[in-house]
Length: 446
Image 1 (cartoon, rainbow, N blue to C red):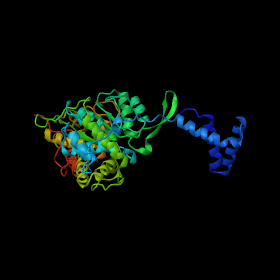
Image 2 (tube, one colour):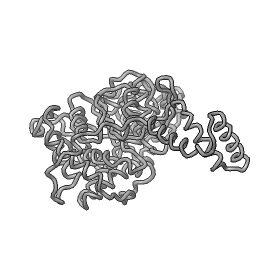
Image 3 (cartoon, helix red, strand yellow):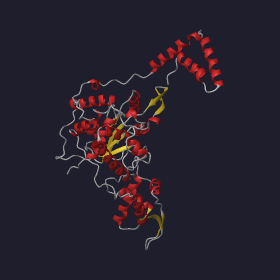
Image 4 (spheres, rainbow, N blue to C red):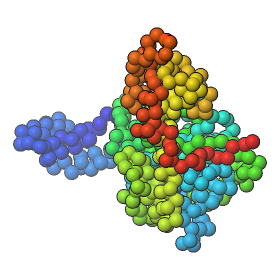
């Protein structure tokens, strides 16, 4: 934090004199204030001018406002009340991207919500992921960054660069290929993912160029990467969208070109005009069962949907319920139940050593079996094979602990039984038996 000017220091003493919490504190403030005035050759008649100077010093020390986007002031052709921000974003992005309905709804509402996020206590997070490259993630990010509120210019950035950009004022952050960043940059970015999520917790003191400075990290974030680049700590704050390659039949109408964005720019202009005038319901009705952090994450998106009419409200409710159920069954502890059942079935056994179970997890040939690339519960660890201790902790979360097993004709060992996994599956519905059977992905290629 920059050193205070003499006038700012005097203002602090004056405030202590006038608004101290106790008579003793006010008396001490008055004494210090009079000492300051005497030391600077002034008297109490100079108090108003010193307070005015302190206000001017505050303004001079404040960071400059972020550069204005010239598109915000441009006219747009969407004067007819039939147009809504969600409808326009959905239609224009649909020309560049191939998405399933639920993905497209969340993507659309997220983009619009970046323009009004300062009205809410939680800034939404959205992540595109896929197991294969060339699945549309980067394209979705590029298109979104032409429509989001003041997006950062880089696709892949260091944590320090993101911090500098956020510090300049309200903005949106979009990052690509997070699976490729080095460990130090990854740690910074995932910390930002956590810290900037909640407005009340987003202000942190940092050392910037040798000086202590308070930075407000509060901002919506969108990211893309291969595989599991987020872990539990980030996933609880995130709408996760899995992507696959489009086919020849589902190929988008247009290819995004950075130098040819006039149609997207017109929609951006509309969004800025809309955001400056809209009256949102900041506490929209939640879909059934959506509570706590899930409700916090969804609130800004649902408020936008509600402002766009009953059809968008219904679409938002359906998409959010679908996403939350999909995310629930993909939690590591629930994935381990499903994968455990697959191991028992593949080996045709009813009991297995805990060490052998760990080996079999790492051998699984399933799309979501990434136990050789585990990052720990925080998501900040280096990629590594799942350890025995981590396995014990995850299974313990669902009530499965190693026990004495004695298969016919074998020596006793400590391990797990098929019955344990079946009971856990029944209790936690890890198989997602009641969940929708559709997959939240773009159509795969042949």
